[in-house]
Every structure is written in structure tokens, then in C-alpha cells.
Length: 221
Image (tube, rainbow, N blue to C red; front, top):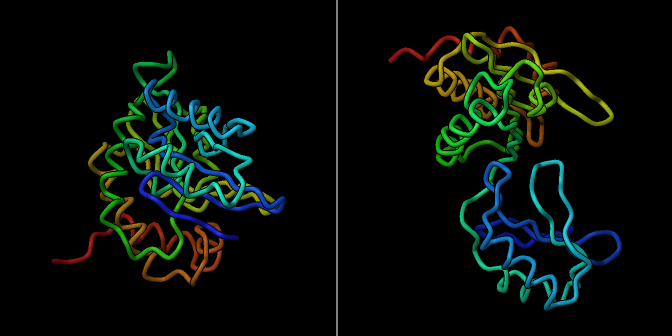
């Protein structure tokens, strides 16, 4: 599969010979100006349209390979980067059931993750503001579920043919502790995972107790 990377996403060519471009949509949001730019590109180059992805992004599809660079330049560098797949619900302040602020947590995670470059497989995140788990937290590499006492941190979830619910690392974490626990978890994952291994397989091979120990116990200074 040919992939063309840019600061705002990636264009990938499919089995039918056509390609798709996924502009950046941090936390699943795109402003009016960016939407208008995408619509104009679709209209100008007579493309089929856009589709919503499971990662809360829009995909411009049906692009002939010879037009990939042209369409990429026409869309331009939309605001924000999406180096990690992160799905989230509306959370506290927008959803009547939200108990924690998913957007501020997602932003804090994104800022932390930008500095992490040694992970062979970019983890998928799910952030949910209440125990209903609408951010798909149970089936992501790293999942967060909010409640009245804070955040529950999950690890090792997966969807697909080998579906696996994430397992609890810790409960009732404040925002600051979430970042510390996630950083330790990902450092442990990066240092011990096999090439291409996702969190679900890693958790089954290493054992969740080892993951919990790494997350809960900081390295001595």
C-alpha cells in the first residue's frame, strides 16, 4: 500500500486503485473554514465525496493516484496533527451524563505523546467521560473512563476478529496521575513490545500484572 504522509494526515491507495486522504481532525473536530476547503476540493476535482471513519475523522476518497499530490496541496495543511488515533465522547460540559472533561484530557495526552518517538506501534486511545464508554475505551490499546471519583485507566483492549476488552490498571486517577500512569505504561510497552505488537497481544504475552507494576511504580531517581 502506497502511503503519502503530510502534517495533516496520510493518503493511502486502495485495492480499487483509487486513493483516500484523511485530513487532520484533532479530537474529531473540524472548523467551518476547513470543512469548506474540503468541500471545494471535492467539487473542483469531481471526487465522490467524503466518509466518516471509525477514528472520528473525515476521509476524502476516490482520488486517482495521479491527483493525490494535487489534492493534498489543495486541501493544504489544516490546523492540528493526528499522530495517534484517539476517539472520545463529548464528556462533561456537553453531555448530560459526562462526569469528566474528555476534550481537555485528550489535549493533554496529545501534548504528552508528541514527545514520545520510540513506540514501534502507535497506540489507539479511547477517552470516555462516563462509565457508558462511548469513546470506545474498552477496545483501545489505552482506554480512559471517567466517573465521579476520577479516571479509570485500561490497557490491552482490541476490536476486530480477536476482540479483547481492556483490563484495569488503576482507578480514581486525577488528571495529573493519568498522564504519569499512561507515560509509564507506554514506556514499558515501548521497551518490551515486539516489532508490530499491539497492546492486546503484549498484555497476554507479558501479563497484566507486569503492566500494572510498571504503571504504578515510578523509576527511582
